Image 1 (cartoon, rainbow, N blue to C red):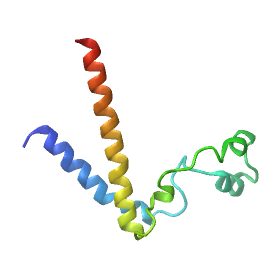
Image 2: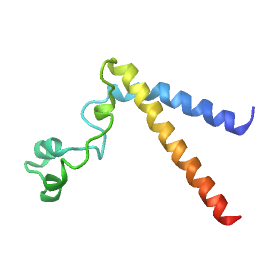
Image 3: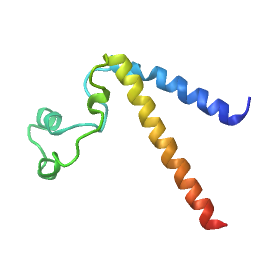
Length: 100
């Protein structure tokens, strides 16, 4: 089996294992919004309050409307990995063209 096939199999396994995150309580480290900061600290930092509404996640809470939690979580993982792979591949091609 070629190395690239092993990579795709590994990524697929990770996507299928992604619903394990549903077992965790609370939010993932570093993914806190204004409401989590308010409950953890008792206040919302000024910068966060100012810019909190500028960015809305395309797949909030790793869900897709109309799907259940687990299928939405898996599809969210696949979409995220696909975006990272596409960006990395495109950047690699761009940099390879510059060098040649």
